[in-house]
Structures are given as structure tokens and as C-alpha cells.
Length: 271
Image (cartoon, rainbow, N blue to C red; front, side, top):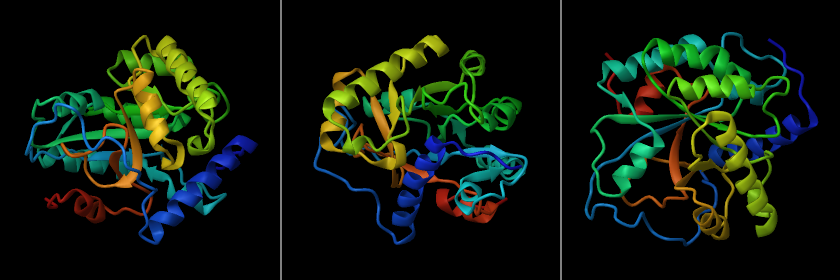
């Protein structure tokens, strides 16, 4: 299925391409000295939680560019991944569950967080029904300026998903490089998107996903000042007691993952 790209979407893909290029050569997005871990995280805790990062989940493979294809997990593959997680004894967690673990409450031994970036309409049309089918939940990071535009979800769809137990969180008002913004501009983006999304979902917004994974120490501090509990990055790895609250690691899932490679990323044996 072909999708028309707006100028904003093209700019978005440029940022994603840069992030993917870094991942290809084995370099993670820059990490800065910030608070080392959550205050109150259990000393010596050994738990770890995979936070999976998805973008698009669709029934038709896009053919207009390789980057969009790379970001699109096909519906049968996504459903097989959910089935594998269930078979391995995993249960869905929210980022609030991870936040509680950071305060000293040990999470389930086999818990996983599913996150979806950007607010694409296929998240509602394809991913959401599959999640409901298996009684699973996910966290959807949306860009407020694109909600209701072509190829993206609508406020009504987000509200429906929130009522079904999905978490709707912030990806900013615009999909831009937050590390290049002034603190004043970043404050506006972060506070306004928080308010708008809460109005759509009827629930407080507590987490943020950095567009293309780019952030600075000042942004970490600003998020805390604005009442966010944490932020997810594109730094590969699992979240542990040593993770910084505003630099949480994720496991990327993309179009090229076979069920075997997906299982390897999570250290899950195939049935």
C-alpha cells in the first residue's frame, strides 16, 4: 500500500534514517552524564524489562521507500511475536509498572512493554485489534500536530484505545530534533503535548519518547520539572534498576526480524 508523504513526514524519515545509520555501525545515540538511576531503585536489584519499540504494523508492505518498509512490521509477524511472548510466559507491562519497579517493587520475572512511535493509523487499524485479541496492552507515543492528519490516528481513536487500557503518551507537538531546541521551545512542546494528549485520552501523560532518540541532560531535567516520570530512547538494551529514568533503553523490532531473530533479541527459546 502506497502512502503519500507530507513534508513533515519526509523530515521525520530523515531523522529516523540518521538514527538507523548509527545503529547500523553499532553506535548508540549520545549518552550524557545525568542522574545515574531512579531514586529509590532497589539496591542490587537484578530485574530487567525489555521495552519493545515498534513504528508501523500493517497488512500490506509499503513499497515507496526502503526506510518505511524497514519500520513496518507485518501483521502476521506481529501476531506471531505476541504468541511467542505468551508461550514463553511473558505478560504485558506498562511503563507505569516499570516506574513502580524503579521505586523498589520488583516487576514480574517475565514482563515486557510494547511501545509504538509516531501515531500511525495502522496502529489503530491493525496493531490495536491484535492486542485486544490476546488481552495485551501497549504504549503509543503520538505527535500531536499529526494526529487527525492523513496516515495517522484521530483523537477519537486514541480515546477508544485509552478506554481499552492502552497508554497514550507524548512524542512532542512536532516530530523534531529536541536536542537542538532551546529550553523555552522544548518546554512549550513538552507541556502542550502533555495537556493535549491528556485531553484526548482522559488520562495523565507521564512518559515521553525522544524523536529519533536525540536528547540532552537539560531535556532530562526539563521533563522531570514538567511532571514526566520517564522517557524512552533508542539506546539498545533492557531497562534495569541502573537505567536512568529519562534515558530508558529499548529493543527495536523491525520488518526484517524473523521470529528467530526476535526471540534472540529477548533471549527467548523458540517453541
